[in-house]
Amino acid sequence: MMEISLNNKRMRMQSKLEDLSKSIASVEGLKLNPTSTFQFELNDTLYTKARLPETQNQLETIHLWLGANVMLSYPVEEGLVLLREKKEEAEGIVKKCEEDLLYVRDQITTMEVNTARVYNLLVQSVKK
Image (cartoon, rainbow, N blue to C red; front, side):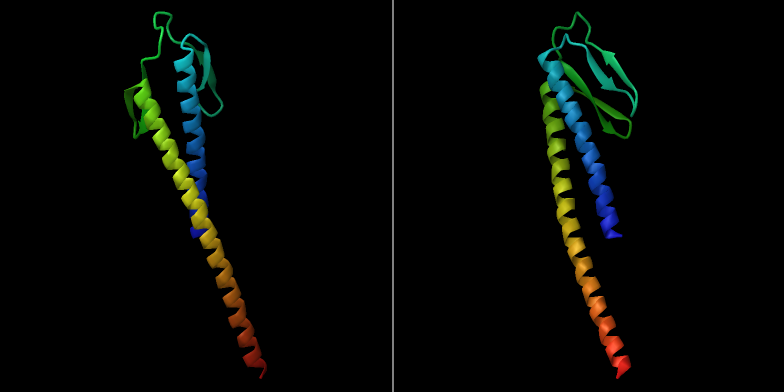
């Protein structure tokens, strides 16, 4: 049960890491070249193309979904800092989950070995 829970948590965090990496790359790309056309994901399989209005020479703000139907507007640099911090947190959680998984697997192996030893001891005592 612990192993499954940790695996699920690790998979969710890895998915979040991919999304954060895409977001950081998008914002940095728009920051460098605001007049370019870019493609973004609307849904899992639905993408669309867009570009900033011609009157806007530079990217000034970005809007980030924080969860629970909350979106906030940030200046570009503050938004990038927030995205990078969230990415570092997610990387730390993934690393911690992997360490915990190794520990749990080690404990499972130890438990299986001990169970086998007890079983073998019981089999030997029944034979006598």
